[in-house]
Length: 138
Image (cartoon, rainbow, N blue to C red; front, side, top):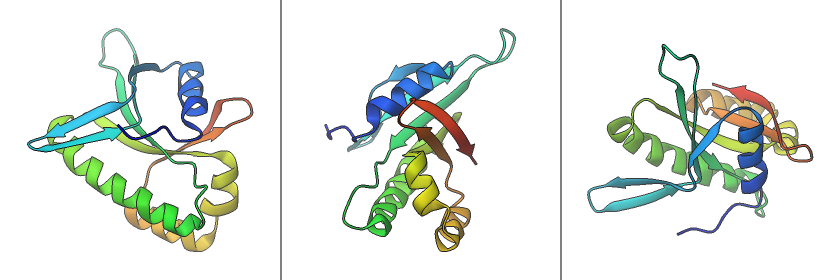
């Protein structure tokens, strides 16, 4: 199993504070001879008469030597995971979780927004100091 990202626990705690129930840590994606490990899966009931929301979260710290290289890795993981989730668990939405600092300093750049919009990359932005969700993008 892969090691946990630096902000894994803060993201997990933020989801719990926001009313999500963590169902998997990690969330295992198995298809034929392939086994992948997304960081978290969570569910939240919307109302008793409707089915709840289900999400899968891939946590990314963006602490490598190059944030652009980290984005390339995150995009690759997202593309691979979403390919299998569409087959195996299509009701789940996949998000990339990042810190508020990374969002403000890197993802807010105009050039990076072009990439995010092109790939329709859903983000979960967490304020690490308070372990709170500050933004969902879709």
